Image 1 (cartoon, rainbow, N blue to C red):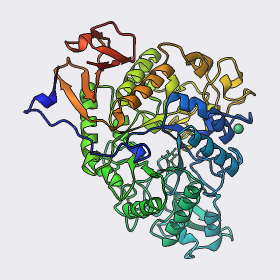
Image 2 (cartoon, protein in one colour):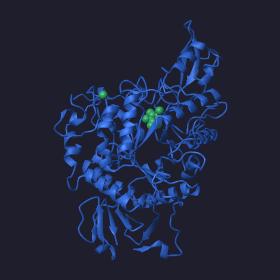
Image 3 (cartoon, protein in one colour):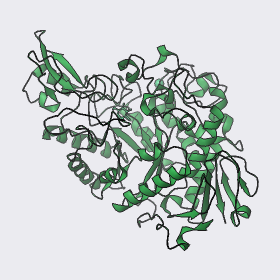
Image 4 (cartoon, protein in one colour):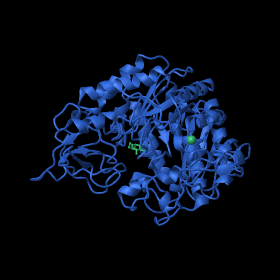
Length: 569
Ligand code: GLC
Ligand code: CA
């Protein structure tokens, strides 16, 4: 293998933008951010649902893992129709998860451990239990209260056809008809997600003003930033025209490129406004976009210098375990984000997709948020999935930029495929009459201690989704300090990543490997991944190099299939 830097004829090495590396200065450019899904992380009061005191108690475990920040999925008051992504009050804590004091304790404890705290902001829609929506229903057509949301009269002679043909991401129509106080059928309201999640009208200045206050409320409490839910959907095309999706669709409710409800230009002025609010605060606060937008240069608009700091790189998440495809997406990511001066992010799992320890071994098409269950085609082989997941993570954590981890991936947790039908809770499952399994399989409560009730999730054994029988074997205490465990692989990788400053490094491709090999140098670390099945020999000088990290057991000089190594040459 030769470094591309020596070969003038090949493409230029990918460059990350120059940036300060002082601690506390734009920390997010290289941060490893760990996603906590509150209801499934740790349950202190034993009711079967994770909570804030549970998180606080487990902060030392996350410090030990070596992450820089946590992102909490929503914990605000909510009827929990979409696991908290249906917010009924933006400035409080749902009693299910604790109190505002508990949140303060969590932030204090995390900060004491040098872990920053990012919370989830859900601005595209509220819960239908939110006071704003109750008032809108009560106030009637044409009122200022209704103008907070997207109410329209129906089509057809009796107004009994939806105002347009848009479909909900969770299946079924994106419109629901209301009933007037006198019992007569009324107007329709738009919900890109569940019918219990009415979309706000972001063209309305009143809505914008409310959210300025919400941002300030949490910034004043000391949170380090926000992950912004559905940051590509907040503004809809003028006139709400029918959508004629291109065949094939996309990952988030269809064709992101042309849908009149995704990636409308109007969203950007909202983020510029929020950017300004964040800069009123000290400490490098951050906004991270959940924007299912393609291609990458288009997504990069979300992270222009005066907008958000980060955007999830879902294109990376969706890339198969294939050397050529991975190299392409890394190149495109560094180029697209670099062009606007932003770091790329990298992510393999979250609470909306099939866990990568299963996804990477699926032989059927990646179902993304539609999930997998017992009857899905292309069932993954467990060992292969874990092996690839470890290799994929080792590759990801060596890339320059920010990285997102999803709780439980450090234990190598697979997607739980065999959940009983009557345990499923995702609205996707209900709205499609069980045709799509949905996302419950990646949301099963974590195993902490093998010999405790609910594998240490709490001390009562209760669990809002049933844990599989083999969960205890994967528990943190079974992996902690155990050579070769997935937990130790993550810890080791994160220590090395920090020590060698890989997050703020520059990537230089190495050429000349066998097919299925992807190799690069980042600072003094050389990373080689074998996405093929067969063992390959490493050419000099790599054969004799010092081994820093290996995702699988390796013999000197060779790299087995589906594995990644970090070397110091
Ligand atoms: C985002 C969340 C997802 C939620 C949806 C609606 O995509 O990640 O969990 O269901 O928004 O709020
Ligand atoms: Ca609880």
